[in-house]
Length: 251
Length: 269
Ligand SMILES: Nc1ncnc2c1ncn2[C@@H]1O[C@H](COP(=O)(O)OP(=O)(O)OP(=O)(O)O)[C@@H](O)[C@H]1O
Ligand SMILES: [Mg+2]
Image (tube, rainbow over all chains, first blue to last red; front, side, top):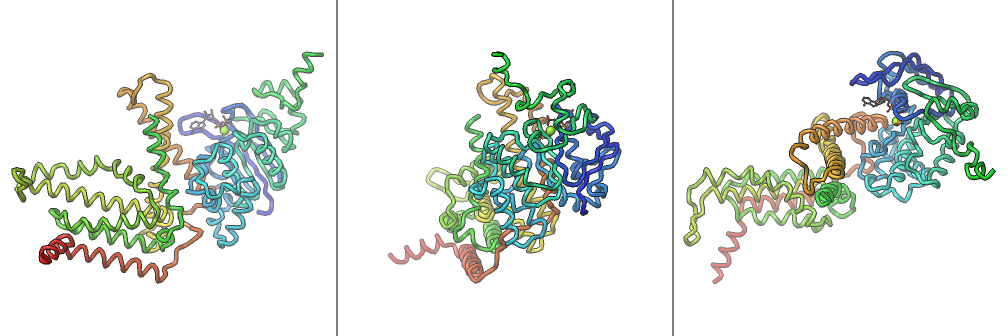
């Protein structure tokens, strides 16, 4: 798997209760691309991301990662390639201490303890959570949990990074740090988010989801300039692109 | 509600306690596991009317709590939680077993009451020793030790997940009941009519959450193997520890220490 590409062809997904969350969705993401997935609540972002590492399997259609279809047989390999940060950090942290939690993945990769320690320290340092290492994760603040959850994935050194709302619950400084961190991650990354300012900073390409289908797929700048399109998707221009409301009132 | 909450959240304390670095914590998990098993076997092997000779065995949990830096009141609180079960298990003894065994002045003590007390002591001792094992070893190390001594992997994984999900269940319970109490105006507790839907809700939420956590574990390469950073090593210290406690247990088992002491005292005079 030298090329970390993602291909979805005609993916349809229906939840067991009958809700269809993805409707014949097709897309291609190339090696090293940074792609934002945006869309209103319930548009299918989390469902889409869940298909990228086999948390969910399509009801029909095919998901290809690096040229291999996501199946039960390829799952181990796929999960080594695709690192996933969940929407809710509480679901991701289950060990008694932050350190153990971050070490969980590297240990499962079968690394020797010295390498595990190196990776854990490095990952925690990157997210600025090294001093939390002996704390129990369930007693951290929302933002700290988020940082640690990201570290658990970074420690696995995935080739494709998939994140569901990484900046939710982060304070401005932590958010800025995360954005800078993500900028240094040069592999393929896919970010589902409501934080359009971050998208503007990080992703050259944006996919707008609406009701389980792709409403628009194109360069971020173009999409964010199209107010009508954003309206249709239930989104708003990022605040950095809106003209200052105070100044315009004055003028 | 608040009170209940702080009690439940305390459950995670056990994990914190297991993260200490005392002499007891640094022992090999297998050693502690075997010692605990030996203790439980000895305690349960006493006859059902035995009370006095059980007393010296309390030295074991007390010594461990002191050496392992475990707060007494925390473990006591947990014992209170299991108290209803103890009562339930022993309840029928005084009713069915009315044979008199001793007279305390006008008071006739039946065999049933003696066995009730005996069962209570035994349960308290065994549960405390299990709690101490978890609080000095940590569930992951215990499971790794279980696996090492040849318990089949599926069973070990079951234990591991039961322990993990117990917390998930309690947390979900807390969240659900808090959400309920914030939007209902019954000053105390949960209205009986709401219990049904609340419990159903709780079950579904717990299952969904457990599923998500399991998925997150899978995503980070979990394949049923428990891997630990620091695997315990059996050293001379472990052997001494085990032999010491085993000797002590057997001593208590086959020598009624309180009785012997009493005799010695009487003969002295
Ligand atoms: N476990 C589930 N069972 C049934 N339906 C679900 C389940 N999870 C999500 N859905 C439904 O699938 C659709 C897509 O949900 P999804 O979680 O993918 O949205 P999202 O874009 O991630 O939204 P948000 O921005 O709120 O995170 C929604 O209509 C939702 O109600
Ligand atoms: Mg979502």
